[in-house]
Image (tube, rainbow, N blue to C red):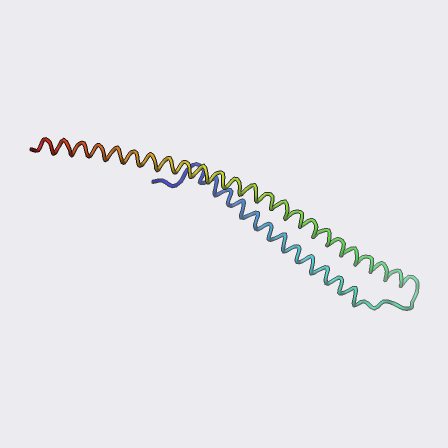
Length: 143
């Protein structure tokens, strides 16, 4: 009995979509980990900086600008982490929709396969009845 239906390829396509979404979620999680490491590195750099206690005003300004730039880099990465988290949430929503489609197609496919199985049973029963009738008549006429 043929196990494929018109929904078999649709199920495969949807499962591929699901795999692609899962891969994209993993990429976003990797980005988050990398951004967090970058933030930690910048914070470590900030902690290791020797703050000037004397010098020219322009040197102090340059130091403050450098500190400001490093803090901006931290905020930038925090924004990227937020964007990745939003993307993951969207991908999870997409996953739910794709999973529903898969379930719908699988249900429809199973219904078709059930109908095919029932038709096969009816056909086999009909063939068995025909064989029984033929054997019955053959046995009656052989005496």
